[in-house]
Length: 260
Image (cartoon, rainbow, N blue to C red; front, side):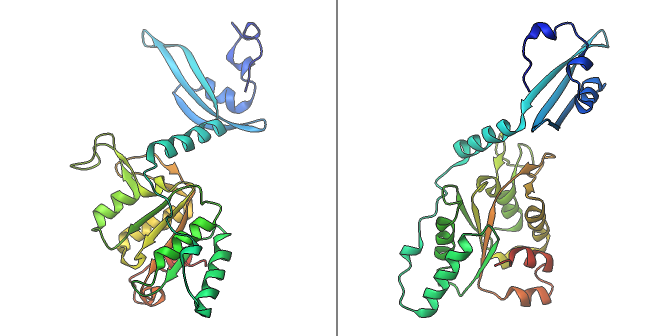
């Protein structure tokens, strides 16, 4: 939103400047606000701050920002602040095989890479599940962004939760000053590889399901949600369908993951 000449608006009632109902409502509000509204062909982030004098409202400061520009800046900051070498090291060219079955598997994986759906890779320990997962990422439209990997069986539940979701300062004893972004945030616009997905505790499976459904996360100790754009590739050496029947793996999470 651009105001042409300030002389046209100085000294005018706010209602005559902010002519849309949504803007008029926000500007007239008695409390400070922070909202995103639709305006013409864009979205605006609108913040208001009431100026008080002798206990009475003397005026309101209104800040308008293009929401698309905020998102672009946020993406740039995420890459600049959180990039720590989370890149796929392997491609399909690193998989050497003459097995017709493996060749067919690679061709199928290349086709999967061109979609944005979640994937579950199943295989015995040591059969190259992460190698295949990295290759899928490198072949995908997300290849220029982060590939973040974590072994879900390597950490106890509380540490796994803080690694995945991050935390704010003071969230728990020993929390890093200033907080820490989780792996989901670091994987924004890229791929997160959840190895040994079958080992995630049931309680944490619920939080993971919400991430897949809502495409947003909340750091431990925080009340703010952060939108994320990720692809999940999970790997396991167990039969997830059997674990679902045994009540050890959530059926709704299973179907969210097992798209391809």
